[in-house]
Length: 87
Image (cartoon, rainbow, N blue to C red; front, side, top):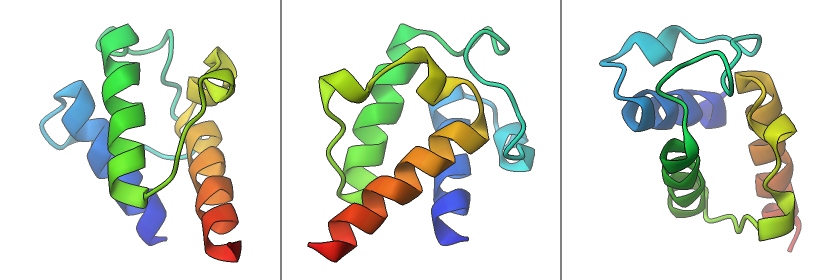
């Protein structure tokens, strides 16, 4: 649950939504649905994920399906954090 909250805060800050992003659900569409969600936002989000969660996002992991929705991004982050905790 804490990962989801931190992800929503990161999205809200990266998109400059002034708190509106905190109400996003796993079904909230991102890429192509929000005009603020552009290539610079993706870079900011990836950097934020790496800093906040201590994960590493490889170039070959960055694809549009990852940013399709809050849920797809959350699944990815949870998977990466779980991998990190196993090592």
